[in-house]
Structures are given as C-alpha cells and as structure tokens.
Amino acid sequence: MNHDSSNSGAAGGNVKRKQIYKVVLTGGPCGGKTTSLARITNFFQSLGWKVYRISEVAYTFMSGGMVFTELNEETIYDFQKNLIFAMMQIEKTFDDLANADSNDKVMIVCDRGVMDSTAYMLPGQWDRAREEEGWKETELRDKRYNQVIHMVSVAKGAAQYYSVDGHGTRHESIENAIQVDDQVANAWVGHPYYDVIDNSTDFEDKLRRMLQCICDRIGIDVSDRLSLKARKLKFLVGKVDWNHPCLENIKMHRFQVENRFLAGSVSCSEHSRIRSRQSTDQDFTYVHTTRHITTTADGRQQVVETKRPLSSHTYQLLLRAQSSRDHLAIYKSRCTFLWDDQYYQLDLFDKDRCPPAASGLVLLETFSAKPPSELNFPPFLSIRREVSGESRYRLFNLATPQLPPIANDDEDHDSVSVQALHDCEADCALLLSSAAAAQGAIGESQQAGVQHQQQPDQSKSSPISNGQVQVATN
Image (cartoon, rainbow, N blue to C red):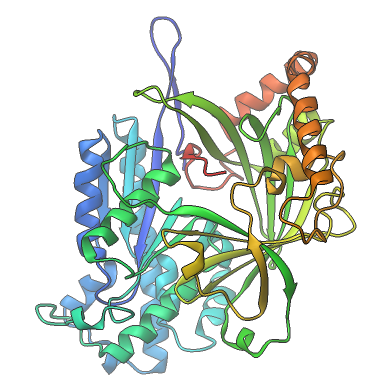
C-alpha cells in the first residue's frame, strides 16, 4: 500500500506529494473515543483533510446479538481471531479508498485497531493465533498505523463521570473498566508513536490534548487553536534496578536501535538520519528522519521533523552512500512500557560501541502536559534530573566523537563538557560547505536514494505513511 505518492504536473514538472495518515483510537470503556472520532473529523476537515472513519467493528457484532459473556474459551478465541480478520479487510478497503482519493491529505481514523482484540483473548490465545496464522506482533502493532492514541477510561481518575447508561452493549463495572483499560493499553505498548491521554484535565481539555498530539506528530501548526500542548520530556537516569518487584507487573517491550547521521547534517536543527529498530522476534523497521528550520505564517521560526519509513533496500543504500563521516553510529537498547498511565521510552546506550559522550548513558523519555515534578516515575529507576532541551543530550551531539563522556557527570553544568559541546557545534557549522561538496561527490547514489524514498520498495517497506511530519520538540 503506497501512502506517499508523487505526481508530476503537466507544466513545470512540479511534484505533489500525497499524505495518508492512519491513526487508531483505543482505550477502556467510557474514555471518549466516540466523541474523539467526531472531533477529529470536524477539526481536520476544517483544515482541508479528507477524513475516513472506521467504526468499531466489534460493536457491529455486539449490536447484532453477540453477547461476550455467553462465549466459552474456544469461541472467545475464534471470535477474536475472526474479528482481527474482519478489521484487516475493512481497513484494506479504506486504505484503497484513501489511495484513490483525489485529496492530497487523507486521514483514516480507526475506532480500535487489530491489537485491541488481543487484549480480550485469554492467556496463551494470542500466542496460539500468531503461530497458527503466521502473524508477527510487530507487523500488526507497529507497521499498520502511524499513531495510536489511548483515551484512558474515566473509571481511572474521574470515576464520578463513569456511566453505561445509553450504551446498549456496555455493561462493565468501574473495576472491569479499569481492568480492560489496562489490558488494552498493554496490547499497544511498543508502538513507536503511542500517546496516552489521561483524565488529568476536564473532558474538553482532554479532547484538545488528543487533537494536539495528532497535530504535533503530523507537523501541523495550529497556533492558539489548541490551548494545551504536551511536550517531550527527557530525564537522566542514574541506576536501573532490574530486580525490583514492580517489574513483575510491567509489560515491557525491548528493541535494539541503531542511529546513523547522513552527509550534510550540520546541527541539531538541520540534519538527516536513518534508524533501524530490531524487535525481539527479529523483525526490523527502518525510518529516515530529517530536520530543518522553517518560517511560519506569522514569522516565527520552528524546527520541523519529517519521518519516512524505508524499505531494507533503501536503508542499506543510504547507509553505504550517504553516512556522515563526522558522526559515529549510536547503538542503544530501547525499552517501552506504561506506568501510571504514562508511556515511557527507556534508552540504554551501548557502553562499548557508542561514542564517548553516549557510552553507558541511560535516558528516559515521555510526552506529557504535566509538569515534570508531577510525574510518578517507576520505582525501578533512579532519576537524577530532567535534561529536556539540554543540547549535550541530543542525539546529534551524542554521535559526535569529539565530546567527552557525560554518563557519569553528576553536575548540572560541567564546564568542560559544555565548552567541548560549544566547540563541537562551531566545528559542525563549518562543515556546511564541505558537506555540500560531499553530497555532490556522491550525487548519483544520492539521487538514487531520493528516488527510492519517493517510490519505495512496497514489497518490503512498511504500510504506514511515508510522509509523517512533526514539529520537533528538541
């Protein structure tokens, strides 16, 4: 499925990209999914997007007479597996409609995705289904959708608003709703763009936060139309206690990640990099990220980050032909998990293979509208301090071989490290002209790489959009 097509105009050969963005709304009962679906539709239609809506497929069966409590162990398995097949087929139909649509900006909003069914299976049934059908969890979870938004049930944090009145197929108690919310949340842990919208604000602001996180991921600047804005928070971790008893109740997904900067990368705000991510089941995903400075309509400058999934072939082409000689590869283990309805990414940088500045470093990241002081960190982590916005903890600088180690730096502002960072950034600025010359020297290979990005190998590339853009937060 091609999510990013290029069409040349009859005159001038102008290239017009088509962007298809596919988002899942998930969560426990009474979390606001139905209202969110309508709000997304109205909001993005007002911005000129064509919005397709996929209603909850399970509701079709439940409203048709199916009662979940009447199913036994085997019929639960058969129903949930058939539900996955039904969702796949319905989504394919909407994918085809989106590709055929004349609008160059198309959004598909799914009221639940295929991984939701796994949350309702009995223990062991999902493993059985994967074995029987040859499904890969990372394929179904990570590659079908650009973004997953979990609308937390009001049973968690706003129980006074929980109600099943007026919903003919909803019968869960508050306790059941909390359990379902947790199960559904864990089913999606590991998706690279997973946002949790909790009940820390009133419902209207909850909807604004939901819309804002979509705009941030896509890269739409809506100025003051959405008042609340979550931001990326980054924390320096001192110690990780892998024997802490709390880990028994945390579903954690682990990935091996490799980041490489490409020729022409000159700063944290202007660079290009590629990433490979390997799951525990040996499935690989590849992403090409670019950052550049742009000027908004009101004259403000902002850094815009564009992400495009790559095929294995295109990734290898860029790796061989365009890797930066001024940056080293970054190798890290990434652990993703939920804690207190907050989605975290824990990055453990390889001590032996990373550049000195990143060697042994441990960073924790999350997106939140809460102040850092209000976050409830998991007890197996010892948090030193917040480092959001500190340039020396940005990937571009961590990949620079000139910077000294900072993993054991207990001071907030180590003068030697800061001075080395400033010197390094000055050197990087001088690389602009040499980088352009280097790009010219590999012009043929680079041109081939661009062609592959515009027309990716669809037999191997992921089915998510090749035009994901977001306003960079650091």
